[in-house]
Length: 432
Image 1 (tube, rainbow, N blue to C red):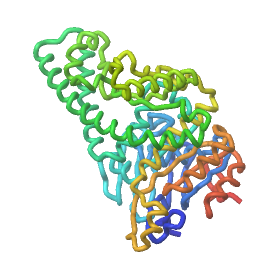
Image 2: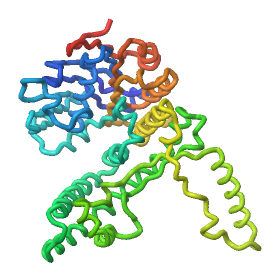
Image 3: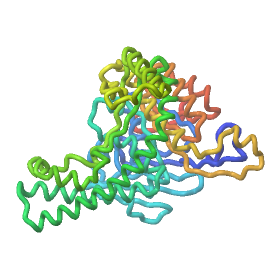
Image 4: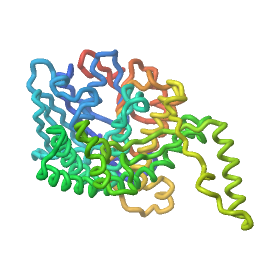
């Protein structure tokens, strides 16, 4: 049965494109696994059975890398030269990736070789919610930055070329910084040229990121209100560009050259951008409310002087990771990821808008693929119910894994015909 289908009652108005057939060969213990996919797919199996490897295969096809190991020799099956993943979408588009143990990569789109992973990524956007991502609040900035950049990549067409060019120049600059603690005049001139290029790219990268971040915030606030309603007024996001955006990056790089030479790498720039999750205590809220009232009085009473800079509301420094419990952090991270989907799909016609105009032409889009790995081990029943009910309302395809069949009653509540599989020792069968 074709998966060119619509969500809910939109069957005549909105067509979405999903994975229809998937094959993974020689990836970990998956010697050769084939499946016919539906809108919702549940893979049940014990630890080590290969169910996470199936999600890894989809992620590899979409991103060109594994979410578990960076080196292909770690996930290519032992004594095999390569791992291959192939998918056919419901519009008959075919995608394929082959990763060899020496990291050589072959990409194909409709049987033609392509040379840029971003081509496949655009065709197959994937969003991963897995146990390993539950530590992103305490980890370095890379995972949080990637969270934002995934959105920016799919929403701003001009972002990726700027990001690629920036990374190329950054690599050249860092290579030069590592060569010597002092540079020749020729090297300094070369460095100045790279600094200028980095500044130009950084300005555009920041522009794209900031636009998407501002659009993302309302969706995040809504997700927090659903998953952590008691803290809805206390948790907020902020975006940091990785450098002072009020001054061109090349000027700042010139000023910091001595320190960068000493360390052997570039300390500021778009590659150091971050998303911070702030926590505001009840006492902080009381102070801010009083200050807000005072500020309002100054604005309405012309006999009083304007509020000075010292009277501005204080910047909140406390990080949510330092306050929330382990379970609350899981819900917070789930909110971060879940809130991205409706933003990414905000141009998709809603059921209400279509019902108001029954003559609306058909819409076609490649739907995001959401990968949920072992969610029953990370989230409680209430959070799982909110997560799955939200996903079921969106035009997205879901692949989820579970140790047990306990999740099936919730799945059956929201999807009419989910595909259910059992994974055992790398072999996939239908779940009875």
